[in-house]
Image: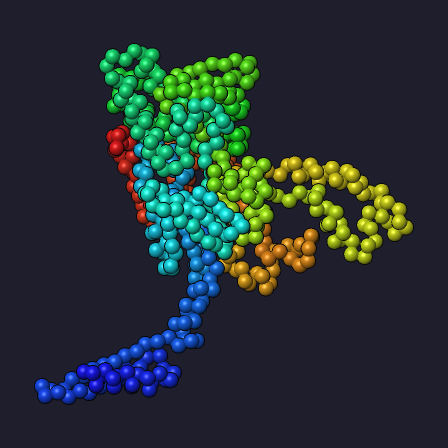
Amino acid sequence: MTILSSFVRRASGAFSGSSTYSRLLVLCTLSLSGGGLVAYSESQSEPGSPASEHGEKEREKKRVVLLGTGWAGISFLKDLDVSSYDVQVVSPQNYFAFTPLLPSVTCGTVEARSIAEPVRNIIKKRNAEIQFWEAEAIKIDAAKNEVFCKSNIDKETRDFSLEYDYLIIAVGAQVNTFGTPGVLENCHFLKELEDAQKIRRTVTDCFEKAVLPGLSEEERKRNLHFVIVGGGPTGVEFAAELHDYIQEDLINLYPTVKDLVRITLIQSGDHILNSFDERISSFAEKKFQRDGIEVLTECRVVNVSDKEITMKIKSTGAVCSIPHGLVLWSTGVGTRPAIKDFMEQIGQGKRRVLATNEWLRVKECENVYALGDCATIDQRKVMEDISTIFAAADKDNSDLLKDPQGNPRREVDIEGFKLALSHVDTQMKSLPATAQVAAQQGAYLARNFNRRQQCIEHPEGPRRFRGLGRHHFRPFRYKHFGQFAPLGGEQAAAELPGDWVSMGHSTQWLWYSVYASKQVSWRTRVLVVSDWTRRFIFGRDSSRI
């Protein structure tokens, strides 16, 4: 065997200069007992070989780190050409939730798992190497291009960091309490799937406590008083869902307290659904009045305790308190702590929301983008660019504001023109924090990443007025496809493009169709439709699970 081993080493050395990638040495050995074959194989990737080139190509890929798996993040992930980038995803939830149906989950109209799609299922369908970590981004170091993350699963797990070439921030937003005392301790919220499940259990608890023996009528009334703070789409839809749940299911299960139930909606403005057409707002208020849902407008909540909610009436200045069994706080969104810290680093500490330009790139950062509820597009002011625009148009320096004789043109009132432009600037509004906006932003940014090299070589964007050439990409443009407001009783209101407003039972069926079609997968689509069917046949489940 020693002789054989020596021979194999010498033979291998003889073939070391060969350009082939694999060498096979077959030795015929003879022994007294018979003959056999010994196969010797040596595989090695030569410099410049396909295997080596593949490894170098992988290393050359730019690393894209995506924070968040909400509407913006999943939309970006689904449309991105992942073969061109090293994609890494970080999110505290390992699923995507269809958030427009969260109010339906609070009352059991739709089950929680029916609107949740695991992120790893979405990644699997991409047929690519996408790395996912269930963790929360706790700090972004813009100077070092690094994100620090902490696992939400195990507190003993060490924190880790990720370096990036491009960072996509799509972490959403948190509830805005406006500093109102007692809100965090005594109110429910409706931002996450866990929030909806908690509300569903609490509603059941309120009814179970109300029927316990030994309680006074006042205590029963307090337990069965449901208060919603905020008259936007989320608050209105929850009030409508809760009313249907009580009238169609719970009063049949708890008949002794059916006359004690009360729902109150508190709105700081003069109308509910202020973002909708006035006709829809008026229709919703009248329907709620018929259904017995009390709507208190122009009231500002100043304190929330475990048993009472205190509010100030704007018209009179009077302060009053009402008892409650459950309070849902739905008054807007605020910035998450990690994003606030990041804003301080890049000079946006005085802003309320992270600002991006029209291409969704974070201002003062070359390789960081922000999408969805966590950011707002800082629209350029027309007045700031008007002098540059005039200079670009006046190529021969002839002064467009003067006639050929050098006299000022009477028909051009530059001051009036500037005043008009200033008025235009004041009318610019930020995009709403909705799923529709976030999804369009994610798809837009993914298209830009897919065509990055092409657009660098052949820019397609508008002309740069402060600089040479053109922008690489066209700026983001939001296209509004309409919005729905389910109002209970199998009725809904819709505001669609073209100033078309629809209200009533037929609109509710349109709502069913649209929301079923917008599900992220066929699995969730089938589950949601089956939940709606189950509710029609058997009613809602009031079990406390």
